[in-house]
Amino acid sequence: MRTLITEPEGIYVDGTVGSGGHSEAIGRKIKAKGRLICLDRDSEAIRISKGRLTPLGKKVTLVKGNFAELDRINHDLGFEKVQGIFLDLGMSSFQLEQSGRGFSFNRDEPLDMRMDANEEATAYQLINQLAQKDLEKILKNYGEERRAKAVAKMITRERKIKSVDTSLQLANLIRSVVPPSRRPGAKHPATRTFQALRIAVNRELENLEAFLGNVPSLIQAGGRLVILSYHSLEDRQVKQAMVDWEKRCHCPPDLPVCACKKRPLFRRLLKKGIRPSQEEIKANPRARSALLRAAERI
Image (cartoon, rainbow, N blue to C red):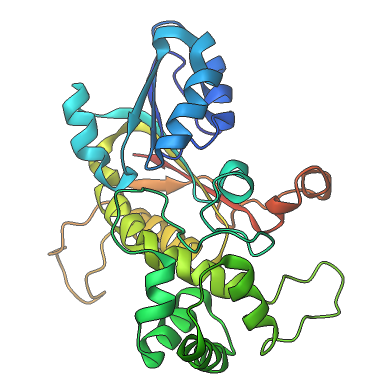
């Protein structure tokens, strides 16, 4: 957390507390007068992390909420700006292994995939109710699934016979049209479809876009934003936002006086991002696709 923390007595936000691992590391780095705001959409994540973060005492405030609404949450808590924000956009071990919501293609669980139980749409509804062309669009746009048409066609054919109820049932359908790769360490054939459904159900890209639009007004000068992403769609959003924040005047070169009045808002600390080392991947195989980007408010 050295990249994030610039002022040990500052106010920091972990917008995706999960099981509390990152929050615990941040909390131990800030001093008694510092504050750590921990958010998550998942009520179970808040419950689990609360126990883990209790030793940090009054430094920590836990809030069930969406990082896309951080401007409102900060206002409600009485903070105008913070010193730093951290987001880990990946799935927590609890969500994959113990939530029972169908996030994993290795488990036979109901197709829910909601991070917030108050959301209306579930993966079951998307799979069993969407028109084939709309399902194909989700798989292609959110999962970058090359066989999106074949997968969508197989799902719509199957659900005419019986509904697709569970994660394992869906994974087996996908395997019938997406052959597994023989390359060492290759992804499961259902990875891209499950990713697409999870993104659609939880509106992940829309939430990230809203958050990035608010960030410049949330972080004080000298403060930092650190984001861990796990697939190209979200990383593309993060990278583009940071590049745009860093840009100066974009008026035509032949214009004698700047008309756009644009000034850089951030400077990127990691131009190409950082990927995990082989040792980190060995310790945590899920980290293999992680990419960390960071920027400092000017």
